[in-house]
Image 1 (tube, rainbow, N blue to C red):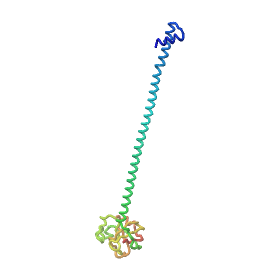
Image 2 (image 1 turned 180 degrees about the vertical axis):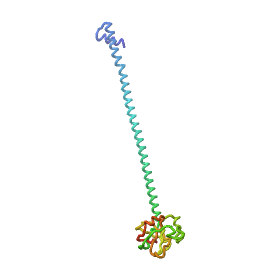
Image 3 (image 1 turned 60 degrees about the vertical axis):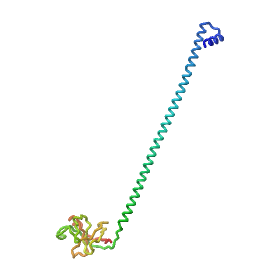
Image 4 (image 1 turned 90 degrees about the horizontal axis):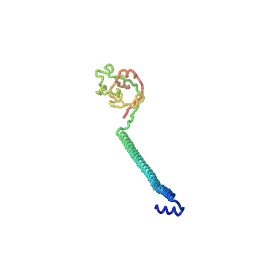
Length: 211
């Protein structure tokens, strides 16, 4: 290589020995710079491209993972919604079935006849009843029963069920007691509290005799 460079230099321009040496060194430096840095730049370029490709591939993988996670969330939501719908449908079906069953078990209450009467109230006091104030004419213990659904009436049979809608709505009363013979057409309602009976006073209302 050295001899070839010297030959080229001598063929171009006749130089002295020192000048030839300087020219040789200059040419060698140029070749050294160009040939040394060109592969390095090429390698750096290739490395930069590889890094960009790796970054792009990483972004693709990251995007793919995000898509997979999003799909998993969507699948869970769909499963949850489906389960909720199934539970709602099952609950609705069960409720409908229960309502139908209640309707079948509970017969419709029919009104046999209606009439208007004076209505009063009484308590389990000796002064208002007899020596056994809690026991009715049928032997029923209203004090132990505790519900205000017992009436006394002379014109109805024992066990007859009655409604007084204007005063008590849908509450059903049962004839379990009798009144003084001087009140043949009056209805007397048993109440737990004396003050409630006094407050009720005397009213006139329509009663419904149920079948």
